[in-house]
Length: 366
Ligand code: PMP
Image (cartoon, rainbow, N blue to C red):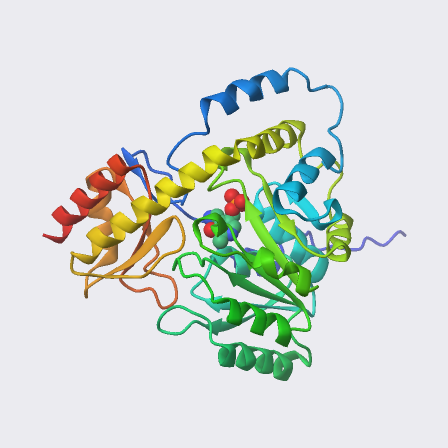
């Protein structure tokens, strides 16, 4: 008689995935939305009308150009690098995921320095990469001695050094720009890749892109979501050595970048001076906002990004966040993240939005 084998059904997710928390940032309807570091202004009207024209030229029944050559060429030209040093994906988060798919995984480690962008360790875990964490100093900057400690801990734990080190500069959520000496120090001490996440790079006075020629293990990640006023587009890119870019293509799904995105990204780069004007306006508003916040009973962290981190003096950040929402102002409550008790983060908006935020915050603190 035929014997029936009982097979345990697999209906749950991977055990480690089941334990993960997904991305959470409330999308609440308010008048003043300053919680996700987007650009406060829409793209220039001329960009939108020219995009409409370009969309009519797309063969929508055909798959898009697989390697997005025109878009990548435009980005390469923008940064003065070669075409084979540029790789694009659907937002810089997907870039980070591709890097970890290619260079992370089982038995490999990614180093992060808290507090930093939570998605770095989250994406590492999703790709089966183990995470080793260091801490930033009291000014939220990375010390090379701390980097050495993390590498040592990784060696003791696993017998190997981190395959990938994340530096976020300017760092989210602190806004701090890492000094060049720190970045070059980490590059020189690393046997693996060093990812400098420059999602906020345009708001800062210097970029690690200048270090690419001298360091083969450096990857600089950028996005169209902030400066380019195109968060809805979901487009990011990385610049690195061509061998690294080759490896990223190996983990890429066919036709991963849709034709609309390719056209829109290429067109956006033609509006560089308009974008630079926006960056200038945001930086000027940031300087003004820091000045105003410093007049209040708060600890204000210096910022090189399009947001500001501040701590309520012994205050209840969650309560203050809710009181701001009650006044139709949404900022980011990050007070439950490691070492950020009492902290809130506000994105720089238009000057009207910033005034409304300031007024609401003054009311809340009064
Ligand atoms: N890196 C950092 C540091 C970020 O803050 C963000 C967005 N919050 C991203 C990457 C992801 O940006 P996107 O996927 O929109 O390009």
